[in-house]
Every structure is written in C-alpha cells, then in structure tokens.
Length: 125
Image (tube, rainbow, N blue to C red; front, top):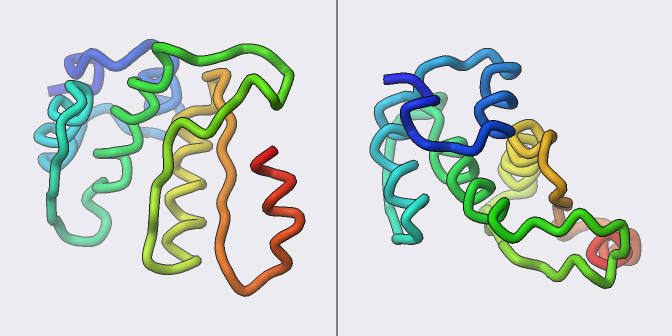
C-alpha cells in the first residue's frame, strides 16, 4: 500500500513524499481511514512506527475541507486541539503538524507550561 491509496488530499501526499515516506506503516494503514471518517481510534505501537502521522495526517485532511485562506486572525478560530503529556512530545507533534501541513492554509502553534504565557496567548489570537 502507498500513501496515495489512502485518499489524502494532494497537499498532504506532497508533504509526506517530501518528508521521505512512500508507504504507510501498519498503524497508519489502520488508523488513517478510521480518523478520516471522523471516528475515534485508540492505537498502540512501538516508538518510531508513525503513530503521530497516523492521527495528524487524517486530522489535517479533515481540516482542509473548511480551510480558510484569509490572512485575518479573526477568521481563524481554533478548530483542533491535540493534547500531549509532556512538553517534548507536544513540540514533536507540532513539528509533525507543520511538516505535513506546510502546503495547506492552516496555522498551528504549540502551547505548554513553564514559560511566559503572553507570547503563547498572542499565537492563539
């Protein structure tokens, strides 16, 4: 199976290819179609098996249906929230979202504790 078989939008297929991936891992093959249909999924796999892409790719695909190309921050409400148990994992997930979503008119930010919250609040506005 190839990523092109999963029905992802061309922008995501391009980003995945640029990241050097051509075939989804088993966890991605199972999770991506489920999340693309708007269903919940709980999966477990070893470190490095692509779990993050398994949920971020279909999430970005679903968000693309109503992407807003406006430059006005007022026209960009928060539409998705990904929670992570640690700052390091939150930053890693955010990096994946940026990598896979780089050809899409979506914005993302990473919010976590232990730092001045004012710059993070500005990122949300």
